[in-house]
Image (tube, rainbow, N blue to C red; front, side, top):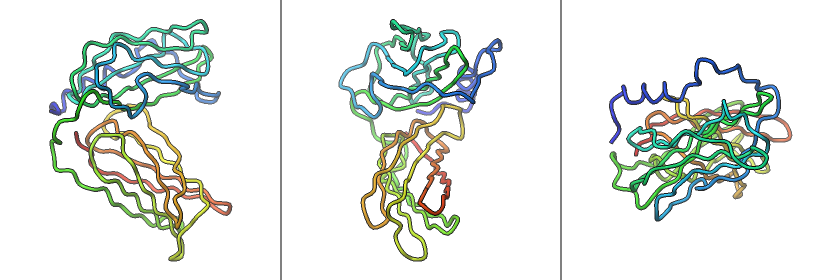
Length: 239
């Protein structure tokens, strides 16, 4: 069950950088997540013992961290450590996890100050019944000459499949590059990002982790050879 707002507030404070944290430099190339275990979107039969993340560059152990959060807003993992010969891995030990969804929120910082802040979702066992009735997501915006529709079969916190319909002047738009970015508006848990693949007749399909309940925002960026546009959608997600 989702706890009162005080639980969200305390967890948000837990996820904030420590007061002595040095300002992060976002002007240089950020570290890239190369491998995650458990992977994004996976459903595990048993509880994992650790979360292990491999990055493209060495990490600053003082400023890089991982948080594993349950649907009850509990912070579950031990403090993360930087491992690997090249100091490019983050590892955090876990207790035995009960069945349910878990958000992995990570911040990776290089010694030069480049930073990446992202999140993803995995589940253990079978999900219980939803707290609220599942409802499909079906939202449309008119933006910069495009008609953009975002659809999903459910508004639940899950590894969701989104369908994006793109049109202009009453005709479908094919051959565009369509990118999605998701984030919680209630807590800074980083972003989830993905690129949709074309399915024909102005339809594009993408999978993306919805990692947090309450206000969930999906930004759809569309680029064609002539122009670009951005549509921002918000809906209420639930466990």
